[in-house]
Length: 178
Ligand code: HEM
Image (cartoon, rainbow, N blue to C red; front, top):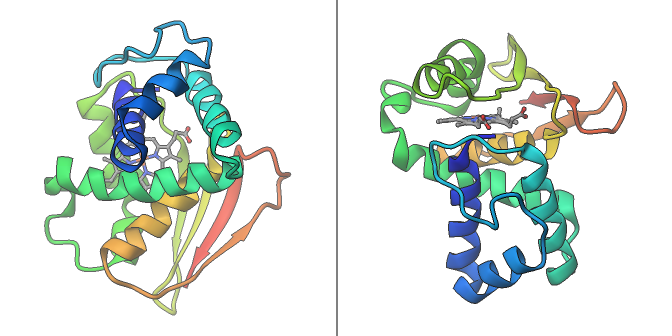
């Protein structure tokens, strides 16, 4: 997983709970890096899982809620960091419909070693989008948070229906945004 995900995670916690919480979190986890990540480096995604689990223990907030909240927050940061990806995009369904062929394709050019999920995308007649996430990594909750962040960014009141037909291990999931 790219270091930008880790650095943004720490920045979110620092913003919400202060730097001491970031230090306490890192001290409580066994990490190959001792918590020192650079945004362009690449690290084992399981270190993010360990960090979120520890944050869950410390805060008493369930891990899926924490991961979703991080996804939602990260979408806003992506908007700040990569404004060019939003050029000419007027609404959330248009943005989400381009996740595979436009957005993550551009991300792959910026970070050739990025470990990205795949999305099967269908634009619905009602104007919504049907997205099926799949990945070797269990980040369906993260995907849901990013989708919610996208809806919030475009100020839309669409709903996200989640359908875990292929089991609940978080590596695949269908989202119907309508
Ligand atoms: C401007 C918008 C976006 C940018 C710049 C972006 C970029 C990235 C980057 C840099 C990563 C980390 C890759 C790695 O760890 O090696 C990532 C992962 C991921 N992205 Fe995006 N992304 C964007 C929007 C979205 C949206 C809207 C979704 C959901 C529909 C999404 C779903 C995911 C998921 C679930 C992962 C975790 C990796 C996995 O599940 O295997 N992203 N993205």
